[in-house]
Image 1: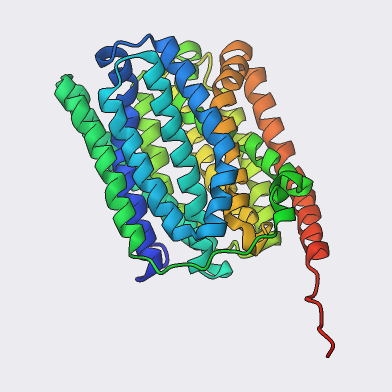
Image 2: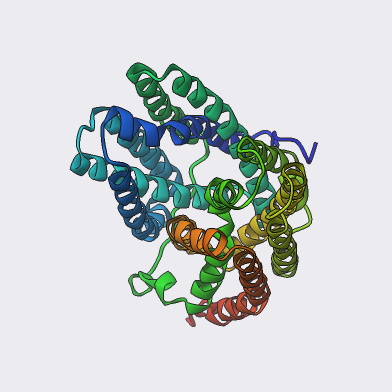
Length: 409
């Protein structure tokens, strides 16, 4: 079934199983880590936030060189080693008892995670044909959401228990999940490493058209902290909707991605369809922002209805933007430097997660309705700019392709 959570047998299914395995561990980690570091380790919440910001900043810088390592040394072996390194970093949290060790462990975790993401993308590109990549990424995104949901449930049990042993069990589960992930990745066929010339070592950093595409995608990714921070703050600070709606909207988002992400990505097969999907998602996101703004100043149940409608529009925009950006990130990257380029493209996620909380808090809580409309307008502008930027990047790729010299005897 093309809309199934389960991709076709072979490398695609193994990649999905590896994704599912570590996403279960990550889901449990995400819902318990903040309370573990503050209540069990005893760190100040502000220092935890500072440490994680520093860690993800380091991780974003490491994505490009680790992606290049995957290109040069082979993505499968690099992905396996980085999965093991991530598991080791998570396990190190079990013995962290102070701020400096916490920052060191968090930097190791963020670096390994960023490199693993780039290496996995390079591995996927080497195992799956260009026409199948976006569809497989949609499967992996649905699998990711399913695993996170299961893991969040397990983390909830640990939160309910509230004991140090329960928290440690969650961290041990997450560490073990990356070891299992590494074992699954090792079952995949080896992919030949690329032969990149020394002069091209910083190629992605000099590729300005691709950098513009990455920057525009980063703007579109400001929707990532919307569900975890922006909407919860909006609901509690600006509306009369009940607090439990935060959890309900999270479940709605996760379930929708699991059910419809594959179907959304099915028609995206090239540059034109990808930019069209991104542009369409910009309009839907603008509509979502306008609807969210209407939830202020109305009765509780009217606010609930409006917020649910806004959340539906938001997840529709999210799925379209995700599918379109996946296609662009691969199609605009040189075939011999996919890991390097994916590492660079992935920095947009880190930047959005780092800057997003400040931006969304200022716009939504501080500016209210005007902030929602500005967020929607900026998203729409970035989505429209993506088309010309992608065409310039594609044109540069074509100019950079030179025929092999003919040796005359």
